[in-house]
Image (tube, rainbow, N blue to C red; front, side, top):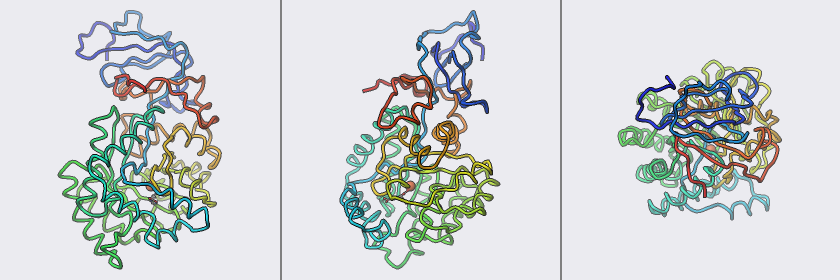
Length: 412
Ligand code: NIG
Ligand code: FE
């Protein structure tokens, strides 16, 4: 793209004198110490050292960032943002000794959120999800994934996916939707999980025809669905050309990661109980490992995901909030940077790649997650000198400005 006098309908803005963590190369942080980015419409037209800007550059606007830090917009690759009610009471029960599994088996857990979700109007579902989305956005998040999974009936699953789509229409935010009908067994199907999976399989084509779904997920675990049930669902997803991802090896090893990898899964998520076999399968398939320190922390898990083995195998690692009312009511992806380092021993740079370039890959979005010419112009400006500071401090939001698709958001 020429930066000289090419006539263009798109506004060009040059953001100058920033510390850039581009994550666009293998060099540490993709660091550029005195950098500049030029946006043209919704894309970056140019990224590099400020001193390397073309001398006869023509732009519509110039902004001096006075050495502030600029990173790619953050990508939260795993959320369950749309639901009714909350589970604060269940939290109290757990503090008194009940386990997450016991509560789920007694009909609480996910199923109590299903009841609250079904009882919520479309507007109430949208409004509560939008409130949560705005909190994520205030920390530089520009793309999120949102799963269904609290409707568990055709009409309610569709309402949840539609609420997620509406977020992208009404907020300056990109949203990828994932159908997670195979999240828990609704009480109407008690004792008949195979019949429920048969039903969920029939919903997918309609969700796709209505433009409601970008990917398909399942909860493959002792309190979720079996590998055989997951495989039947994934076979239909594959037939429809929808990519898959999986809640895998969260509470037990079901060999779900290897199953998902056979379907070329975009990601396997959680992974505390992941085996060497699962790691090898993910590596071969190019599947991203999405680690969720919020759920690990909140459920007081003690089994760590096999970070060193994932690293050694070269499996890309992403970090997400897993925001949901039961296992991770977290609304801070920046806090997850700290938790990924303190709990999972990721390096700050690994954690950052996990909420940018690798998170984008977990969503099948190669057009974002780095600062580079041709990428979407999604970036955050921080009151910090270096991104390692955000992995170090917690309970603190130094995000000062956010540009989404080339347009600066007004921060409230
Ligand atoms: O990602 N593991 C299954 N699903 C969610 C929790 C859902 C809930 O408890 O409401 C998770 O941890
Ligand atoms: Fe989840």
